[in-house]
Length: 156
Image 1 (tube, rainbow, N blue to C red):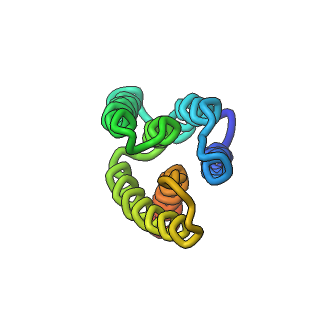
Image 2 (image 1 turned 30 degrees about the horizontal axis):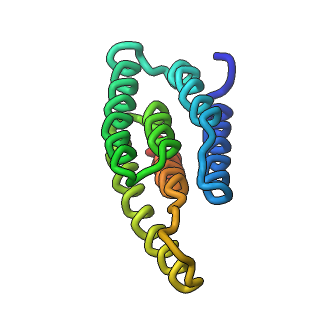
């Protein structure tokens, strides 16, 4: 093992926080950051003992499926391209059984975030529609899943 899995997990969390911060500041998540998250996933798989079949294949299949589904939302103008890529990249890291809970948490956090941004936009009496930094919801949901997995490890 090149690095302990905890170091990779810490780097993943740092990259997620960078994505959220960038989305708040500029309403963009850089392609290089999304690519780095996605390309580091095989190191995580290796360090955490994921089997090539069906483990790695399942991670890849879920990520591709999510990319296709959320690319549809992008095509409808309901979501940014960086958000779509971040969701797919995150799916490469999460255990498959945690992807649906992450998406559920993402939707709930995203709904609250949207209401807060809309309210702030109206209070400030700004024209047009506000842009929602949905990367914040993706990151919050992912960090919640990671924290839950760490904090709920059964005792020996």
